[in-house]
Every structure is written in C-alpha cells, then in structure tokens.
Image (cartoon, rainbow, N blue to C red):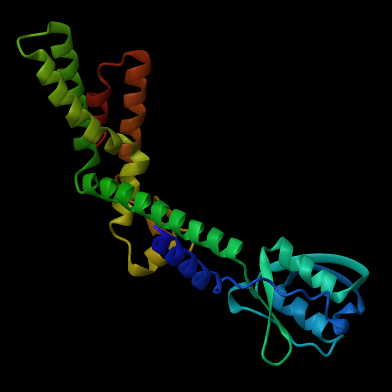
Length: 260
C-alpha cells in the first residue's frame, strides 16, 4: 500500500509540472507605467499592440485568442494591473517568453471549458445527423403516400382498439410501433428538410457546421436552393388533415387528391 501511495504521489507531481501557474505582470517595474485606454470591441492582438507601443516589454497572444474582443475604459491605471484584469475576465493567463516579454495563453479553466464545448458540439452534431438521416430516409418516398399510410395505420389501430378481437393487444403493439416510426415523417417541415439535405453538396455541409445561413424556397428563387415543385400540394394536404382533425372533415383526403 505504501508503494502505491508513493507512486501516486510521484505521478501526481510529474503531471502537475505541466500546469504552470500564471506569471504576475504587476511585479514588472516596466509595466507599472500608468495607461489610459478607451477601446470598444478591440481584438486582443490590437490591444496588446497599443499597450506595447508605450513600453519596451514585448507582449504577445496565442493565435487561438488573438481575435477575441475586449472593451476597456481605463484612466491612469498601471499597465500590468490592466493586462492581468483582461486575462482574468477572459479566463486566460500570462506566461513569460524567452526574450523577457510576456505571452497571453489559455488557462487550465479555459482549456476545460473548451474541451466541454467540443464534446457538447460533437454530441449536438451527432443528434443532428441522426435526425437528418431519419428525415432523408422517408423523403425518398412521396409525401402524400406517407400521409395515406399513416392514416390507414391510424384507422386500423382505432378499429382494433374499439373491437378488441383475439390477440388485439399484440396487434395494437405492432401497429403502434409502425405509427411511431412514421409519425415524424408526416411533419412537412421534417420531410422537406430530409428531401433538401439529401441533395446537399460538401459545401452545404461545411456551411451548416460553420453556422452560416442556408435557405431553400418554393418556387425556385435564385440564389436560394429550391424545394420540390409539389410543395404547394403537400401543404394543401397538411391543411386538409388539420381541418379533418379539428372539424371532422371525413372527405379531406379525397378532396386533396383531386387537386393533384
């Protein structure tokens, strides 16, 4: 047991060396000079350049953080104090460089946050891709065929539930499973999403994961992507299904079929 405890202590000490503590800028006499700043949404890189012009100390920032924006209204405060407060707000830390200057880099807290964000993003992407695969699967069929299948299954379910024939519970379970699988595809928005994304190029997917705007419409309107020409008919079908549900219109399916 003592050997294991000693080994754990040695390993812990070894890895703790990688987590360097932040360097204090307030102890540098050159950075005790007072500074006045008025900056609004200024990138970190530009801020450090502005401060560096008033001192002989070299100030740098890691490339990953150089475009982060800061807003400062400072009057006659020591440079080191201001720079440390900037690092604290952004959860970064200062480190010394070989040439006697300082470099702003990520802190352990910031690294943990970024790791959590990457994991959350990867999980979100996974859920989105699963949802799109589901939509794309049913979008290979005609939308009205899906609606008719859903209506037939729903009618069978209600008929068996009311009559309760022999083995009715297992029948309901089977039909209920089919209804659950197809129900999401009866949503016109999901169907069109599946139809559209199944035709995406590599550029479309890159734009999606970059958070850029993607637009599709009907009728076709450049420069936007187009939805299928029968979208209007599908929309009318959805409207008639709504009226059937709300007002008991038993002829909604037949009347919409005549519109095609």
